[in-house]
Image (cartoon, rainbow, N blue to C red; front, side, top):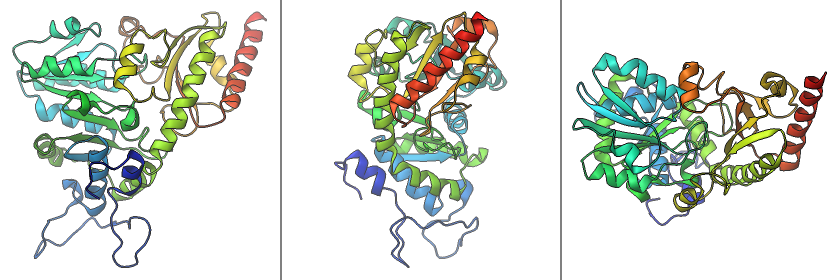
Length: 388
């Protein structure tokens, strides 16, 4: 299916399927071979070259979802992030990033870039001035993450695009928290879209994958490095990811709806100090989020009262799982200070406003009344414990 006018549910369901020509099955057959013929063939296929039948087909789905010409899938989100950055940054180059950033990406930059002679700078805020003042003559990339992990800050994508295009800088976005359901960065001029496909694209907490979508020219540049680094994805996982993406829109819209209700409930709770959710009018970039997003995502964060013990609160939950990842159909929660941002120093976490009482909440598709009941039960149990 090649039409650019297909609806997003249709794209998720049908684009990027492998046709079962032998048995006419309703879903893509799985090609597990790691070795393909090279004589008398149109394409010399090899798993590390990202061009097996299942890999190649799924990339078409991801590219169309992001309104791009091409895509690549990787073994993890960080494989996608690191390969893409290194494909465009060389010795003596410079990259600008936001201060609030996924811990894995932040750690990759500060621990690895000096080995390659790559310079970097973090924008302190989210305004045009915050980014422009960090740009240097050797800046080749601006990398953003919106909504950001874990504080859900929103970056103006149109502003970033204009700022970069004036200077010939390549723009990249980690679009994981939004997913293609909630945000299409190409509409605002962003060059390269990156995902931890483990999250909303996978959606069932059972696969690890990454994805990049961009122009054919940019994807070719990324592929030239990717084939040497070897971060490709196994075909069985590719097949599982394609299966999962068929229901992505349905899942994400249900999570969006639940998350907005939970954000409003938490904002009124006496034991919650602050809620971070772009769909709340209290969010500093609410109007911007409303402008550039189609939904506000199923992710939020909140800070519990400092009188409560975070560990005890998490242990008191019965249904919501304290878990390391996010975006599954089940609700999960974690402490960024102990997990996603644990590699950062206490000083750096403080600089990013990541307190020990902050909890990142991935809202699932359960009935919202059941989610509320679980949280309320934990609040009551921990409050009682603290009074003893």
